[in-house]
Image 1 (cartoon, rainbow, N blue to C red):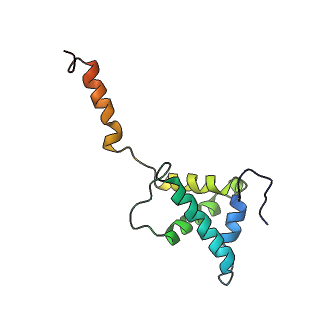
Image 2: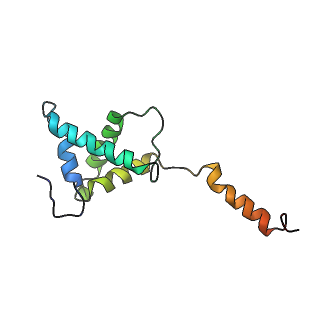
Image 3: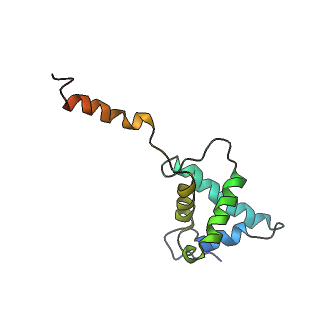
Length: 115
């Protein structure tokens, strides 16, 4: 049963139970899949960048493997574990426009704009 005394809705242990439920237990499997999808959608590419073409089942399998390989931290909030697990696999790389201001400031400070 989920622990509601924590600040998060589910722990990694709760999520582990949901995604490892018997195939006939559609409710738990759906809760686990939906929770993972919600965390991924909410992140809006702030912490990890899922490549095009990756489906929800593939992400679930990766989170399942991450939780399987890290049982010592399953007591932590599930949303944080999903974020950490996906960030390790798909970190967001800086895009060229995120660095463009550095080039503009470089021109400003080296005298090209006020030469």
